[in-house]
Image (tube, rainbow, N blue to C red):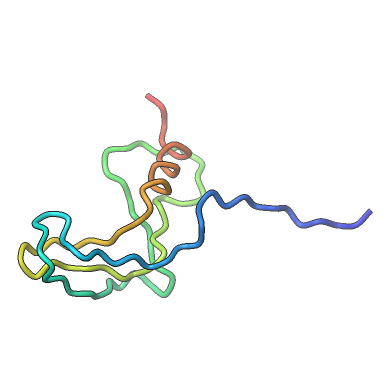
Length: 97
């Protein structure tokens, strides 16, 4: 018998940086790129108002990069993440009430 390592199914494709062309709030094109001090590999998005299951590997949805954009007109600070990954995280980790 040959040892076979466990295969981990990744539900989403490898992250690729996606930059917005317009501000989601005011539609301005006056956008600046920057980063937060989240660490080398990104960080976590911690959800407010959602009770998570007691046993979980992470406290929030991983952010794959510390890169963000800021609107020079309205001040919105944002990044684009895959909404499927956010919904999958909530479905997998949130307590059902």
